[in-house]
Every structure is written in structure tokens, then in C-alpha cells.
Image (cartoon, rainbow, N blue to C red; front, side):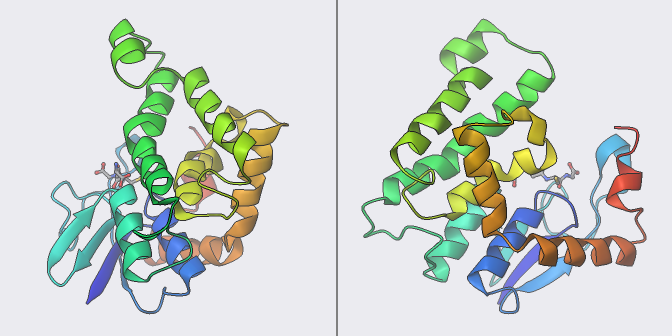
Length: 215
Ligand SMILES: N[C@@H](CCC(=O)N[C@@H](CS)C(=O)NCC(=O)O)C(=O)O
């Protein structure tokens, strides 16, 4: 049995989007849980087996898988999805690289840049800086339509995810914007928005706009 622990309008929304694109959203049990949100609103949910009360979490036959990159990799492998790149696919290494690059580089850089932290140790010995990260994305997108190859993959879904929240981080025009627009167009955003809006109501939470109006 496969269970996704999900909280609406959070990092687990990308996993829901992947399941929807794979047509597997009814083959996975989706359990909606509370999480601590922006500004400390809400609380961890005792129903959520994540050791820190976070989402997403995938539970497979009693074992847990945490971290979006790992969850996406497991799901695309398990369902042998064209949104993944299987072990015999020549682009498997690129696929893995982008899934790991997201968690190890993209998200840390976005946070550190937002917090205006630019220590030497970070730039020279760890994740580099935002300009270098965007150059890496553009270099891949100069070679093919999407990050891994010419077809949209779960890696595009993951790496484009923060720009759904902060679209102004990428230039209004140019290759990155074109790729981001294609990533959005590839997803069933209407279904996801409707699903998450309903779950917000179920959890007794305010709408997304109300929640972030002072952010
Ligand atoms: N690196 C993890 C981050 C997971 C994470 O921080 N999720 C947030 C939701 S956006 C959360 O559950 N926050 C609740 C908390 O920190 O207690 C991943 O990408 O899966």
C-alpha cells in the first residue's frame, strides 16, 4: 500500500501534481495532514509519521520515504513512468543529477539569497550562488527543450516548483521563462488548485490569499 501524506499548498503539492500527471492519483492513498506554516500558523499532525511532522512523506508498506527528490524518483521508477528516466535510459544520470541538484543546490541557494547570506564558504565550497545556478539551468536548456532532454520530466516539475511561488525570481523573458511557462503548461494546474483549495477548507484553514496577505 502506498500513502502520500499531503498538506495543501505546500511542498507536497508537487507530488500531487506528479501523481496526477502519471494518472496514479487514485492508486495512491492521499492523507491530508496539518503542518506548521508560514508565521508559525498551525501545528504538526500526530497522524503524520514524518519524524519532523513535515510533508511530503510517502509510506510504502510501512516504510517511509522523505524528501521530494527521493519521492519523485521512487514514484517514477515504481510506476515506470515516462516522467522519469529508468535505469536503462541514457538520460538516467541527468535525471538523477537534476533531482539531487534541486535539494542540494537550488533550494539552499534560493533561501540563502533571500536571507542575504553570501559567505565565502557557501560560494566556494558548497552550492555557489544564484547566478551560477541560473547559468547551470540555462546551459541545460540551451541543449534541449527541458532540463534532462527534450521531454518534460519529474526533474522539471521539481526544479520549477519554487518559481510557482516566486515567479519574479526568473527574468520576465528569455529561455528560463520559456521553460518555466512550459513546465506550468505541462501540469494540470486547475485540478491541483481545486484539490488544494478544497483541502484547505477541510482543514479549516484560510484561503491561500488570506494566509499570505501580509507576507
Ligand atoms: N526538503 C524537504 C522539505 C520538506 C518541508 O520543509 N516541507 C514543509 C512544507 S512546505 C513542511 O512540512 N513544513 C512543516 C514544518 O516545518 O514543520 C522536501 O523537499 O521534501
